Length: 152
Image (cartoon, rainbow, N blue to C red; front, side, top):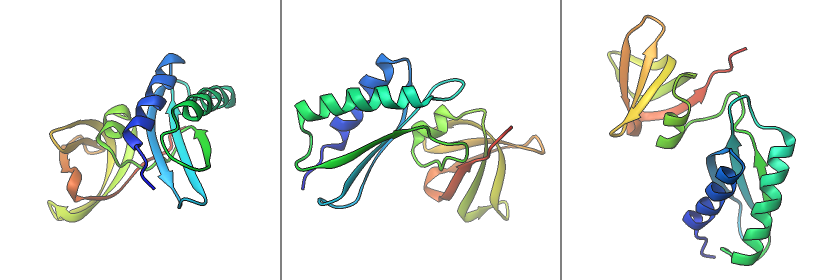
């Protein structure tokens, strides 16, 4: 089965932007018999159930017409969550200013785990402002795990 994920992301981006929301990510999980299309959206102050339902309805209608992959699927639209994992460059950019925990494959300055505030993303490097006021740049290719840290 061939799936045009870029086309699906473009549809999700268009729908989210039309509703004043930000597309965070699009995931495709499972096999051809039980395909799950998961769309994460966000906005300042967080998304509501109504936001998710609206995006889901609009995406379903467009996907039914444009049919970017054969067969049936389940569409799930949700918020990225308080402790969202970070993978793609756009996620590091979007969540700049938020607290995160990053684990490296190879240590930097004899350290593998960093906690602090995301300070941007540029040229394959995640910038992070640490609690001791140092700023480090971490190679995206060296990151094994990254998550937002909930703040209340």
